[in-house]
Image 1 (cartoon, helix red, strand yellow):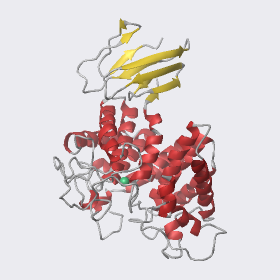
Image 2 (cartoon, rainbow, N blue to C red; image 1 turned 45 degrees about the vertical axis):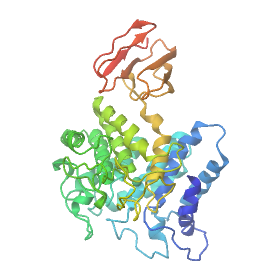
Image 3 (cartoon, helix red, strand yellow; image 1 turned 135 degrees about the horizontal axis):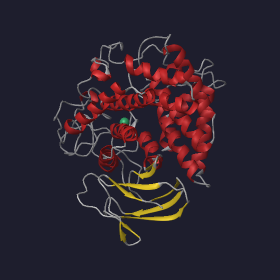
Length: 458
Ligand SMILES: [Zn+2]
């Protein structure tokens, strides 16, 4: 994917606005103001990949160093960073188009890449850039700033994570303000209705999820983070209600979300056409991000059932078996003679592609696949195995190895290599669809209970 990023011109865009770069006006490559986020998302995934191996690919390490250096030198002294608005060739003022400029959306992905780099590689260069940009956002849109929101939610969950990482409450407050301000029609746009941006009704009063599917899911995930960190039960109750309504009425059997290519929108209840569905790969990722947060907040395993349903269907369908080609949209049926307008390309798409003119999905897949390791188990009172997959886990005083062919085969072997005297107990999620299950420990029955089978690790 680093090759596609280079060829698409994303690095060239950053280079063209770098301090000390060539003064000649270099044409901006691509059509959108959010192309920096493709770099950020790839770097976020790359941080995990580089941390996983002692012998990384030279392509990866050279991309890492080049991209990080360009991002550092492209940032303005006041912290602002967006190569589209900074481009002399584009000639537009920063913050002049909150509806479509995606500047705060870009900040969100920059924060997430910075946190991944700091946590996985102890490399704080990206995070330093992200914090300077976040501080600018706090001064511009914080309690004393302009009362508006970005046209594309995403920054909210990144700001909450930055708060968790730094302890700085002004990042959490900015995320909270962005959640509360949305729904009051502050986004000025005459191309799309306010509903597209989730700006027609406040989230806590929303009857049902609506508008652009990816925007809606990022908003819900960020709002869940805010509700958890601010102990806002009323907001969390609304999110639970919206989740239940979505799963019962608006989600495909694949876990895909978004019934309409028009506006890339969530449809009405039970509006779920199989061959005209949109179900963007990014929407699958965003819905998994929301599901994971709802599980962490409640401990209820049905959120993981939905997570797994999306992972193995809506998400996996968007990626070729060799991991090099992608679908933007994931209908349940593709008819070669039906030339529908895809969300990604004007002439539709029948085969997976390595890249798109609107390339949000491939880099999103790169980061999400790279960090799936963070969404397998949870440490709490127990070590909870949330998603069954072959892996090695060393946490909670336990060193264990899971061997399984799940989901192709409904069994798993967990070998406990080491259990400290004070090791946590082990909990294993039993999928909700599983009508009968049983556990064996050392050949003896260890009957699981309800959706979480309890198998003591000691
Ligand atoms: Zn996408």
